[in-house]
Amino acid sequence: MKPYDVATTQATTPKTTKAAAVPSDTRAHRAGDSGPARVPAAATRVTDHVAGSAPTSVPVTAALVSAPAADPAAAGSAAIAPATATGPGPGPGPHRRASAKRPAALAGRRRSLRGPAALVVGALLALVAGCADDSGPATRTAPVTATVSATDGDLTLQPDWPKDGQAALSVDGARTPLTSGTAKPTPTASVAKVMTAYVFLKAKPLAAGSSGPSFTISAEEAARSADRLRRSESLTPITAGETFTQRRALEALMVVSANNIAHEIARWVDGGDAAFVARMNRTARELGMTNTTYTDPSGYDPATVSTAADQVKLFGAAMRDPGFASIAGVPSYTDSARATKPNGNSLLGRDGVVAGKTGFTTPAGANLVFAAERQLNGRKHLIIGAVMSQHRGKTAAAAISESEKLLTSVGKP
Image (cartoon, rainbow, N blue to C red; front, side, top):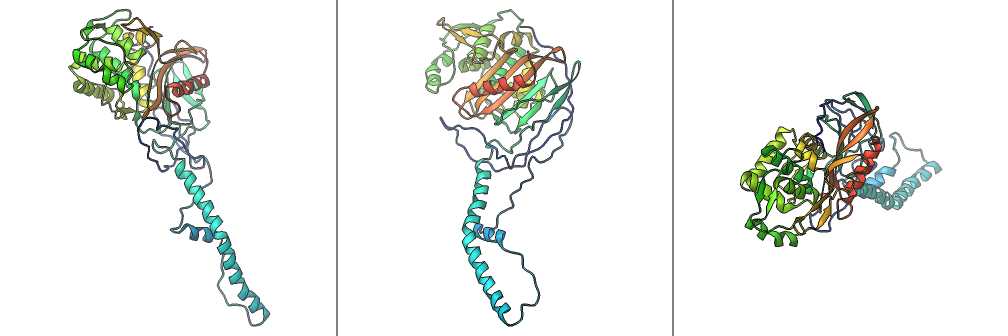
């Protein structure tokens, strides 16, 4: 696959809306404890960020919930209490007797309605709190049209963003992608291996079609295989002293997401994880990935976090590397036991998708970063996209499905 030498472009600001902060719930990161991030419809505001400009914002709904009183029951009764007027009371006679009965009747009504009113207020507050997005202040892109500047003029897009998590799109290498969802860093899972591959190739460039130099598997990493299997890590079979060409190692990394090869790459390049991770973070800063922190080369550690927008920046840069572009779209990998395994990204080769990297762990949910070709304004454009933090299911399938919908909404291959 040829490298994609895409132009840096800018985008103009569409009408946007921005979310008010909602309270976050706490979710433990343990097996089976995953679920979709939810946003209350009444409290949601939305945003569509584009390059080089600050978004304007308007509220999605006019309905607001007032702050409750200290006593919910008091809040309920206050909500139904009639307005009072000052002035002299009624004169003597039957009118005074009639008015004397009214306060007692109103008090009875207040007591009878206090419980239901308190329940209504409490239910509204519980709904808002229970629907809070666990990844930070909620933002969702409204159904508005985004106009971006590309190499052959303005392009009009109306992305079908995921309802949960976060996503980003870049056309022809725009420095600041269109985004949806929160900008809070979230665990990357194996999407971190895109940076591992990129750093490996920057340290040891690989020509398209070349196998590159050979490297040897260490006894230490081979001995860790049992522990990695016990933790259900993704890996490829290895033996101490086995040789891997650079291309074969990158294919194991990108196609079957081999954690053991990610850590061996760190050793081959910098002698171990610590120095290599420092190199990953330096490279992230150079690329303007301000919301990204790497703590390991595989992404298995949930402390390795990033955003969809940052991953789009990285993947766009990586696709300009001829070695990366020739490997990121390889459909299958054959291991040392001669078992052939398909690429985890089932979109490859379909709907214009030419490259990608999946990731899944329970803390991260399903993630995917991808590159796809689209015909827009009669010309072929390269779309770089990322969908992250999709907490449905136990594989990367949810991110793949949302990415497919997102791509379909912005054009045809």
